[in-house]
Structure formats: structure tokens, C-alpha cells
Amino acid sequence: MATDGPDPDPCNKEVFNKGKCVFITHSIPSNAMEGWVKKVAERSGQPVDWHFCGGRARVLALGDISKVNLALQELMPEHNELQER
Image (cartoon, rainbow, N blue to C red; front, side, top):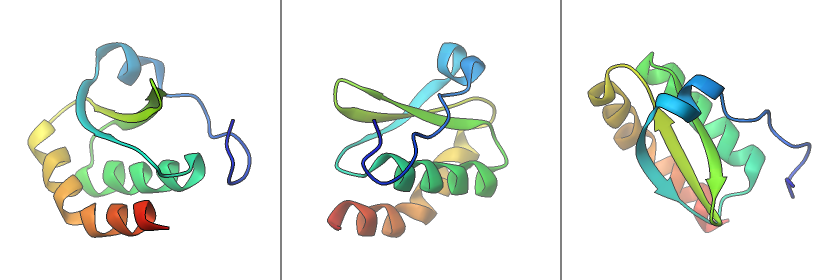
């Protein structure tokens, strides 16, 4: 259950089933994580989604993973800010 608003939509089934795990994080509320991952997807132009697993947020992606990794690096300062809140 989200603690920062309504529950985000479930992880895209295709990304969940076939995606490669590209990042694992923690301590970011669900809706904040959802917004950040959507930015990663938009910036990379690739299918990216996430879900909680064992108390951690797993970010999964399909397509050109190098583009996703570049977007993750570019958006890491925002991630770190969210984690510090």
C-alpha cells in the first residue's frame, strides 16, 4: 500500500515477466518512485517499470538497456533527493 497517495498501477506485465533488472533501491515512497521511473522511461525511450520485491523497489526494462542506464545515471541526483526525504 502506498503511503504517499493512491496505489500506483501494477508493473506492466510484459516488463515484469521479460524485463531485465537494471536498478534496485529502497526508502522511496510508491508514488514518488512511480514518477521517477516514468521519467527514466521517457528519457530513455524504452519500456521501464518497477515493483516492490522483498521491501526493495526493482526497476526493470526492455529494449536498449544502455539507453536506460544512461537515463538512470542522468536522473540519479533526483533519485538521491527522493531517498533523502
